[in-house]
Image 1 (tube, helix red, strand yellow):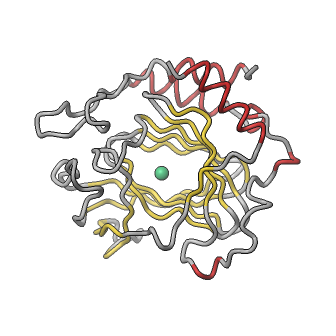
Image 2 (cartoon, rainbow, N blue to C red):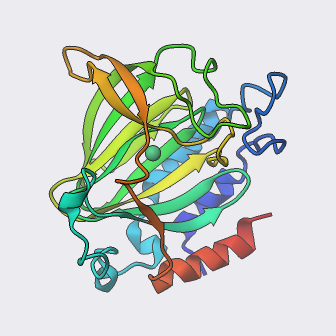
Image 3 (cartoon, helix red, strand yellow):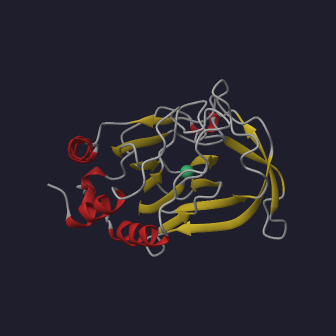
Length: 262
Ligand SMILES: [Fe+2]
């Protein structure tokens, strides 16, 4: 039912440690488990190798489906948002250990700079060309983890701008280490899509692994890498829609959920 490359990736991903269940994000009190269980370097290396081998054909997507965003949202005016047209999110497997999903970006769209607290993120371009700006957090990233009653951090943070890479058909993968990393995706030239594996998965608002969006206040340049970022609310400008309109992806999602969710 699924390709050997995809099966191999999932078999390795199933060996990832299960994050604490209490309180969704695992940090509802100061005495909650922290840091989260980390996979061994050998497991990360195996995961990265298997992830790099997965191809768009392993998702049962063919030319006739591309770009995934082609028939949607043409009536919307991208000029109304600084981030362009909305992103399409296609879940493949959302389990307790990790999330595997496709993010499809219309031409000219941007996924704003956002956090992946204590998460490992593997990204692989499926088609198109995507610029990835990455930042590594430098200050005490535990100091402003939201409590159960607040949804996001309200504090500015100090980061190191790690630079920009362009994911192309020749340079297709990106790995964010699990130490408070942030990134921004932009697809200025053409429609694009990335396959992503997030370990552990994001939590709900108020958890320690909730996604926070940021803007640069200072720095962010190759000659000025130390960058201050302030949290922003993008609710009015940025949308990422949960989509189920591509049948092969929907079928794969159902199959993987049945086979691998335990
Ligand atoms: Fe991300």
